[in-house]
Amino acid sequence: NAGVTQTPKFRVLKTGQSMTLLCAQDMNHEYMYWYRQDPGMGLRLIHYSVGEGTTAKGEVPDGYNVSRLKKQNFLLGLESAAPSQTSVYFCASSYREGVLVNTEAFFGQGTRLTVV
Amino acid sequence: EDQVTQSPEALRLQEGESSSLNCSYTVSGLRGLFWYRQDPGKGPEFLFTLYSAGEEKEKERLKATLTKKESFLHITAPKPEDSATYLCAARISGGYNKLIFGAGTRLAVHP
Image (cartoon, rainbow over all chains, first blue to last red; front, side, top):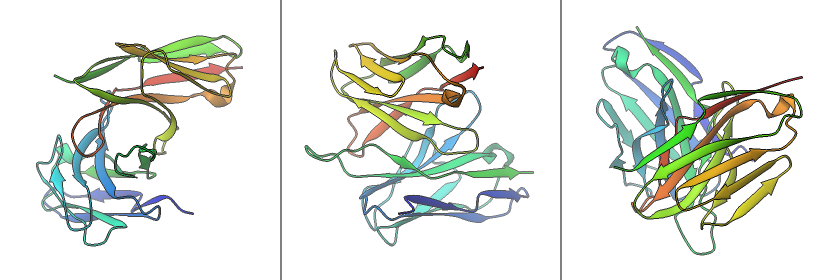
């Protein structure tokens, strides 16, 4: 049982380049999230999805796009990378809130992205 | 504005020296207070969820408690392997399990 898997683990981009971060979960979770983590700050939500085919903006969505074509996958895209997007990116997933279901988020191992 | 603040930012303990980490929150409609442990280079790992004031949960040397304004993570007789960053997060109404994270407390336990 792999949980939440992110690829790649490390990447260096030049300003203006594009890339896609991949996230896969095998827990049949309805909800998926992309966060970024910067020194001295809490995890900040970029985008999220409450189900296959749906996405929505989080706290810091500018410069990012997402897609969720399959329930188990959630992709984060950077169309034109900027140095301000240098960060560690975490994907997470959880069950939707319910009376009998635990809804803690499970996180991947992270992708360390540097934009030069 | 919804806010979660953790203190201290960093804590250094000797092995066996008990202490507490603080997580204070100002949110509208708390729907759960979560504690996570994060090791260097890894993703956060779930520890506890607390739902109502007065609730307590324990796991090995860790005990989490919740009041109406803050949560504490008590560490009893810590060992070096307890060294990590501890994150707390408040879940609030938002339709998607919306979490507001604190910046974390970096704990170092020395032998």
